[in-house]
Structures are given as structure tokens and as C-alpha cells.
Image (tube, rainbow, N blue to C red):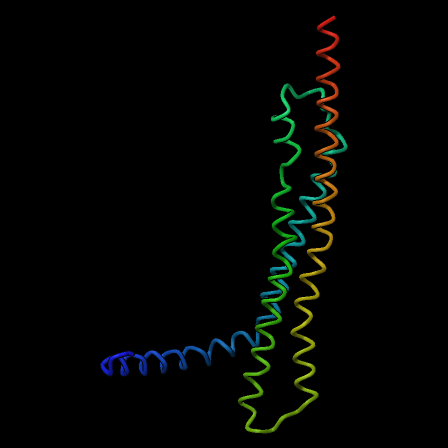
Length: 173
């Protein structure tokens, strides 16, 4: 139970929120696609750069140059966290765009004055869903590359261990 003294405060906050929401919805109706798709584009550019860097590194890595397995692993796993983070978060950013798009569709529907245009609703909903599709399109190659690079890390670590074992045998003889 809230005291009746708090009710004017809640009423005041409600009206402030209403005054804030109208400009926010207008802003989002104009720019949400640019914000979400721009963010996903930025993530894909970063992802592409990190993937190219890793491919070039794995082609030239020489496990003989590393004194310890830990040094090798540090170099092998560089940038993998970024690739994984992009792959795991891109669908959520796309989903955020979809949720906001659907919210804006319902907001517009509520302010239509009872005139419901089914075609307009379908267009808005289909446009909202494109954000999720783009998020998934960014995530799939990110996770494929992350998993492939994980295999390269294990492969190079095993090469280093095999060389270390061979060198130990030679020194023991």
C-alpha cells in the first residue's frame, strides 16, 4: 500500500513521462533503422577486419618461435573475444530493432484514431523484422569463424606440444 501523499508525485512523474515519450517515439520513428542497421554495419566492419587479421596471422604463425605454450596461446587467441562478442550480440541488437519497430507500429496504430490500415501495419511489421534478419546475418559468419579459429588454436597448440616433446627426447639422448 502506497500512502496517498505519494499519489501527486506519481501523477507528476506520469505526465513528465508522457511529455518525454511523444518526442522519443517521433525520434525513433525517423531514426531507428539508421541506428540499429548502422550499429550492425559497424559490427560487421569490425568483424571483417578481425577475421582478416586472424586469417593472415594463422597463415604465418610459426610455433617454433614460442618458448612457452602460454605465449603461443596468447597470440593465437588474440581478437577471438571480439569475434565471439559480435557473433553473440548481433542477433540481440537486431531483435532490439524489431521490438522497437513493433512498438512503434502499435504506437502509430493507437494514434490512428480508429482507422486501421492492415497494409500499413504489415509494411511496418515487415520492416521491423529486417533488423533481426540483419543481426542474424552478422552473427552466423562471426560464429562460424570463431569456431574455425578455435580449431586453429587447438591445432597450433598441439603442434607446439609435439615439437616440445620431440625436443625433450632429443635432449635426453
